Amino acid sequence: MARKRRPKHKPKPPKLKQETEVSFKFPMLHPDILKAVEGHILPPEFNMEDAGFDKKYPTHVMGRFACGNEDCPKKAWFSMKVAIVIRRYPGNRYNAVVFNQRCDSCKRLGTLTLDNDSYVERVAYRLKKWAGVWMAVPEYRGRTGPPHMCALCEGCKRGVCQQGKFPWSDD
Image (cartoon, helix red, strand yellow):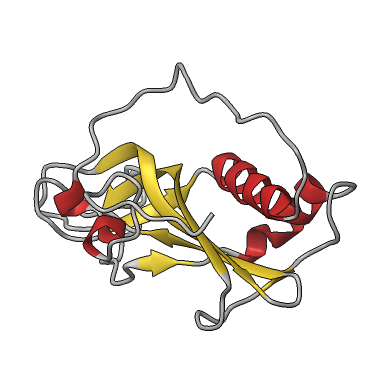
């Protein structure tokens, strides 16, 4: 008797968890920062603490966001303007806080996939600049994206986004 074969079912993709974080730190990219500043400045240390910084600088990086709301028609978006604030601490330490964005369809927090290259480039540039290394200002022409929406940017809501109504810097 011939045996019937069961149809192979594709496994369902894992459900995306609903994001709850409004900001992120990426200490796992510290080795890349060290490579980027090598030969220019003393190797800095990554600092997980938030208090005690002596300088801060807002800028932006790039990233992709996914919406974890299964009922939302918008599944993902890309942003050229993801808010980040880079902070310098005494003792040759630094950190960088990257701020989340909300889905323009359902208003829930997105799940960020950071563009690591833009993060490393921006953080390393700022650390070298603070250390007194002369560099030409990088040009970022040619890369465009959708307009920045302050109402959906957690950096704007906290007054730390360059694109917001009240940009600031201690530089």
